[in-house]
Structure formats: structure tokens, C-alpha cells
Image (cartoon, rainbow, N blue to C red; front, side, top):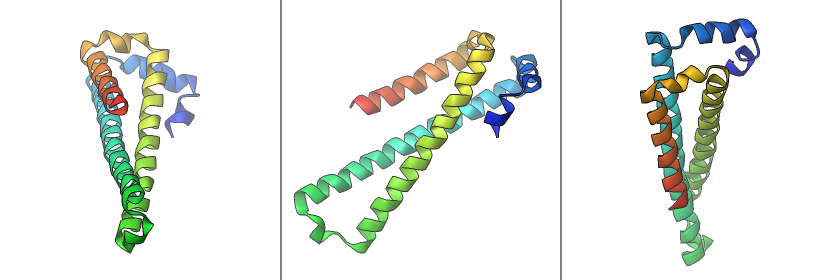
Length: 126
């Protein structure tokens, strides 16, 4: 929905007018919270997927139960969905920051984005 809105100049202008307002701050906080949640959940699911795959390497597929296979499949689906949603949130942040550089004048917002990126990098690189 937002991708369609972002193509409309009227929408962009309205967004620019809202920068710094309480409702805009709330929107940014929700966007960052959603992105953080999706990234954290995706990382948790990746670790479970990796554990499952290591277990298969050690023990083979013979020892897997139907429940193990279903959990693995579910973890992969949830992981994919979480990272897709996080990507959408990130895309929105990119669009907002491209159209209105003033967003990063908000120290709290810039700090939250930096912390979020550091969190992801730390877990991806570990």
C-alpha cells in the first residue's frame, strides 16, 4: 500500500509537512519497532533452521520425527515472512529519508536506526 502512495507527489508533500509532528514521530517509532521485531524474529528462526540442519548432518534424516519436519518447514516460512516484512519497513525508511533529510535531524530516530543496524550486523556476523 505504501509503495503505491510513495509514487504520489501529494502524499510525499503531506509526509514532508508531518515531519516533526507527534503523529509522524509515532509512525516512525512504529516503523522501527516493526522492523526490529521482524529482524529479531527472523534471526531467531535462522538459528533454529541452522540447528535443525546441523542435527541432520550429525544424526541423519532417519531420526527426524514428523513434528521436527513440520517445525523446520514452519520456521523457514516464518523466517522468510519476517525478513520480507523487515525489508518493507527498511524500504519505507529509505523512502522517507530520501524525500526528507530532516528525519535524520531527529537524534532519537537516527540513533534507533543505527542501533537496529548494529544489532543485525552483530548477529549476522557472529
